[in-house]
Image: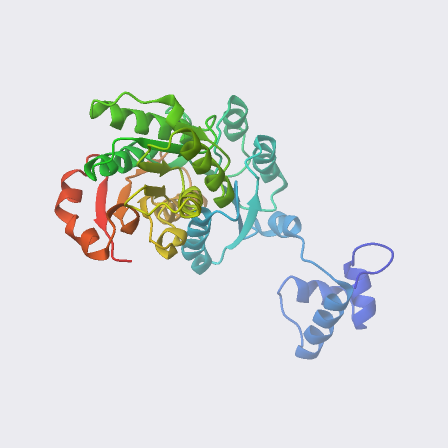
Length: 362
């Protein structure tokens, strides 16, 4: 535990261990000492609650070997996939990954970029769902390298990797129409975000391509979450009992919509086809398993990590902006049995358009 006078210091650790201040300094900075001295210093440091100071290390050696990943929601499976891939790239290189949840609050996102000036981290991967002028201003002045997972204006001098939500949504809607559906409802996430706007564009574009005029009454916007998806689906089904399918902005919403259908004794997909987005573990574990659009969460995490490491290790180079193509993974929530799922391979490949279609038996 720490002393009553404040956080432990080299002096208090030396007094507790019964060694010199110089010996404590050598041990804590990894410069070596006699085994018995190392043991005593480490034991005293642990007892006093000593935590190494990342700022001090960075001032001495130039690096903390720590990176930060700031995301809107630590409970969203899409961000969990990103974390795994970011660690897969950075951990073998000796970096530790700090996770920061912003709860999609703009000021929190701005603060985490500003905090780079404290040099408690060597770089940042930021995943905002809104990009404002304030974001662009703070990013332009960032003290250390930043990579954004999301869409930025073309002239922004910041590395980024983005999903193609427009094409991904269009893939889902086209798939539902090829399954014979015409009354296609849409449960979107917050409409004032870049992904929310892009999903709406993809939804309306695909309908118009098929000669269907989008009905605003068939679109509901909500926060993300399983319960939110269930509430939104009940709203749609109460007001429009004739809808035959629903596309949801993520798998959490889709699972909620499936729960709502079950509550009403509607069969999936016979009475109501359901498509999600992200192709998360939730989609694969559903009963029935959910057809879902894979926006490449894992791939975006990997690319962002590689971009950040390249900035840290390789110095200056041209700004990179990568777009990950969407992929439709067809499962039972739109086609029924597993045999039926497999039979749609040729049709799926033919309609790929801007993305690709994968037929899954999982």
